[in-house]
Length: 530
Image 1 (tube, rainbow, N blue to C red):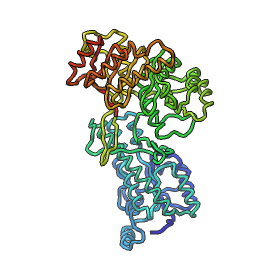
Image 2: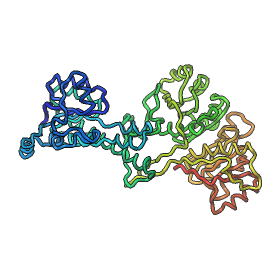
Image 3: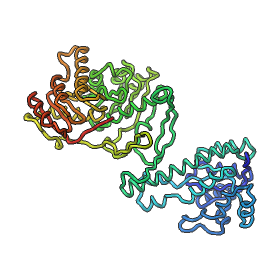
């Protein structure tokens, strides 16, 4: 193995022609023999460069609609030969195999083909075979061969050639080999996912191939002693928070992303609806409201728990306007997420240089399919996204008193929020505003009491005659195993209850609701969020 390898012959075969001609001209000026295929060769020749067809090396023409052109011992022998191995050298001489020192390959656009909704035959034809084979051969033999798979690396290659008088160093070849194997792994991962999920409709394939592209390293993880990074998937995916434009503010941290995503997912529930504001702290909503204006929604959400809102994350479902931005800026806010923001809003945020403003362009479909993955010791837990939903027709009235129309509206609003609250989750809501939220407790009674306590604190702080839990609807993300949690909600003034039902003590809970004069509906669906 030698450190530097002089580049004398290069094989170029690319789908993405970005930067190809410029690269070819520099290689040609250095006296490098250019070998190429199909459209790549034509592009280079059209630029006035001398190019040898791969068929001149192999003695076989490109055939079968281009499916077979580089899959030949002359090509792969030139890539895989260990140059200082006497047996390899003898085989090369015997079979007239010339060494290939540089391979520049990028693959058929499988990802783009799937993304544009191509038919199955077109998708199959865009599965590259020869390209990955050359990439893997060259990368394996990086002791002697340089492999480049991304036009973004052309500048680095040219700088390397300049620094070493037309050669490459082992360190550079190792770097490019690592990137090349990552490229083929991601490519095969996309193909395997398409076959499993799109082509065959298998939700949990026997072998789950996952991939990701490094977007940025983060300052640290949940705690300063942990390292962290943001990756985005390679292949078709729903654009979301990871693709948001950061207009201003400090670098986002791991916790910022995690909390902002929780806010973004919840506000997406109100996509296309009237103005909505979500405030999140430590991945749990601490205030949610809908109103006729975004500003009114902000005030409603903030008044639910303005203590927790300090240092929180705000997400809105519409273009941010100036008055709302000005109001948000009155308290310390870490991140604001919105589809867009008008110039007046941007001007207010600009005065808070550390506040991060993320513009997403749109909200995702909250009912979209997909998988969630959670590592555990020795494995991965994989499940479908919690995209289940219920409407008025799905509700079953189980008490003597049926809810009023307003109570039903409040029930559904509270239920929408509760599905995004950590279990055990209790949410009180009235007139499109959360009155109190109890999250993450080990029993449902304590969640009910904590939520009511927060509502009472808000009433005292803002000088209301009574807490907003009075006359509210209360949602529980899972069934009440005992009547105590429901009775705690009744003590707080709730008049209607929405819960999944399904407890062995449902009859006891229903009887308690009747005795308290509550109206209660069952959804038949729970929304645990651990």
